[in-house]
Every structure is written in structure tokens, then in C-alpha cells.
Length: 372
Image 1 (cartoon, rainbow, N blue to C red):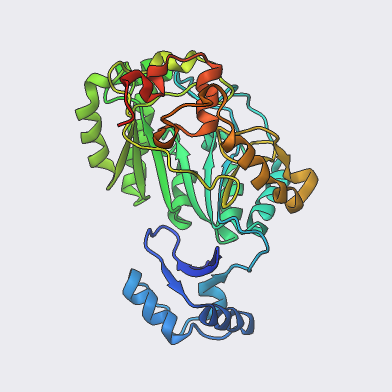
Image 2: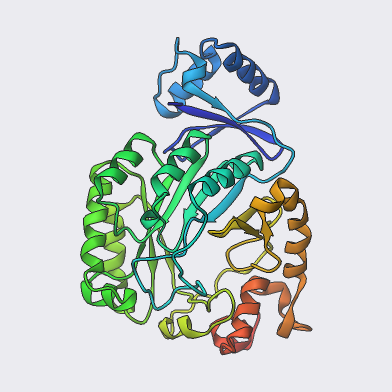
């Protein structure tokens, strides 16, 4: 199995290693040389051996380049990143979930395999596999193995409840993901199980985190702060530091992507984060989202005018930038707002808030009376 991946990245060329955050950029001439060396079955070039030794402590000197290096092809499309809902089904029933529905349905295995080939041919190097809960999909292991074998750097978004399973630990140990992002819904069973509406969920999480950490699987925790656990934030941070080198926090609860308001009830009063000003987004231009049935949209929230990749193939993606731009330009109920230049909410998300008839305090700085 390959140790490093050489890949186009927009107008650049990079060397990356599965399971490692750090990468390196190389000129086109070296990428072309490496590609020719792999095709000819030659040894790993000295310059690459030196670079991998310095960057990751990996010794490739004298090894067959065909075995050690996977060279991804240059593609006509400029996409380098995608998120994929392998299935919307979930073994939790979280109060705050942004999905409009959580039906356990999607493509059969051969459809998933065709879809992954299309993602590779679109140029996707960084693939986020999400759900629902992706690890409960019957084809997750096979799909992960295929994506890894195609030279994708994989991020898994999971609730952590199945990370203790031997078959999953074995796979992720042998084929390291770029990272596994685990959602943390509380620091006690009381708060965690209350938000997830799943008795025993917290116990499953702890079992999964311990197994993954013991196996050396790279974890990153995402703290989801709600009314159920706001009093436990310090304890949640301590848990995150115990199991991962880095963690992030989210306190902004959104409606479902189609504007259903129920998730907003989980918002913790007084913890809305308005600090980040929305500065634009390349959704639909350099990355995109795919649902369980193979329909591509600009992102997880902006799902208008979906494109069937299975029916249309890569040609369908040629329409995506225009579809994305139309959604980003729409202001809806925000038309004429004098604070639009400092808005903290992307256009598709603002549309979902407006459809949910959410109070301005949930997403708009007008509630504060200023643009600061």
C-alpha cells in the first residue's frame, strides 16, 4: 500500500501522507518526473526519499516507487475537496440535527463505487465521509478502502459510537484517515444521552474514544454546546484534551437545511457566537457535497438544483458553479440590509433561518443593533 500521495491541487502539485497533517508542495517538473518514474517501475527518487524522511521520518530510499507512491492524474475539473453523506441513517436521534430527514437509504455498493470513481476523476483529494452516522452504513468499510486506495485523504465525521468495533479499528489502523472528527454532546451520560435521545450513547462514545486513542487513530473532537450541556463546557474541554490534540467548539445551532425550525430549541441561551464575519465561500467552485443518492450540490446547506452524478457524470459538475453563485447572491429577506458587508451568516444558511422564521437573535447582528 502507498506511503505517500502525489497529487494536483488546483494549479499546484503536492505530496501528502495518509494520517499526517503536514504536506509539501513540488514544482510541476518534479511531479512529471515522479509520474514517469512510477509508470516505469523505478525506485523512489532521492529527492523524494530525502523529503519524506525529513517531513515524516519515513524511509523510502531504494523502494519501488510503484509500491510506495500513488500518483493521482491531472484532471480537467478544478475540484480538490468534497463531502459525502454515505447515508443519512443514524443510530442517534439528536435534537439539534440539521438534516431534514434521516432515512436509511442510498446507493448500492456498485453505485457507491461508481460515485467514488467520479469523485477521483473530478480531482477530489480531500474527502469527508459523513452521514447520518457513516460507520453504520453496510458499505462503509468497502467504500473507505476504495477511497483510500484511490489516493484520497479521508476525514470521517462520526458520533464515535462504533469506533470500538474491531473491524473498524483494524481498517483505520492499516489505512490511516487524515483525521476522525468525533462530536461531543456532553461530559456526562445525563447531558449526552438527553441531547442524542439515545440511552447508553455516552457509554458507547467513551468506549469508542478509548479504542481509537489506543490504536493511534488521529482524533479531533468537536464540542457541540447546547442547552443540555452548557454547564459542562469546562469538563467537555478537559475530555477533548484527553483524547485529541485539537478540538473545536460550536454553539450556533441552525435549522434543518430546508428551514425546519425544530433544532433551534437546543440552542443554549447566551452562547450564540457571532464573532466570525462571513467572507465568501468557494462552495461549488473548488469543493462540493454529495448526498447518499449521488446528487451533488454546492454544500451541505445549499442543496438547490441538485445534479445527479450517476446520471450525468462529470459533465454535470460543469453547471455547479453557476448554481452555487445564484444561491450565494440571493439575499431573500436580507435585501437592502446596510450590514451585509459584515454579515456573519452565509446566504444559504440565512435562507434556512428565514424559512424557519427564526428570531433575528439566532443569526443576525441586527439583534445587537450594530455591525461590530
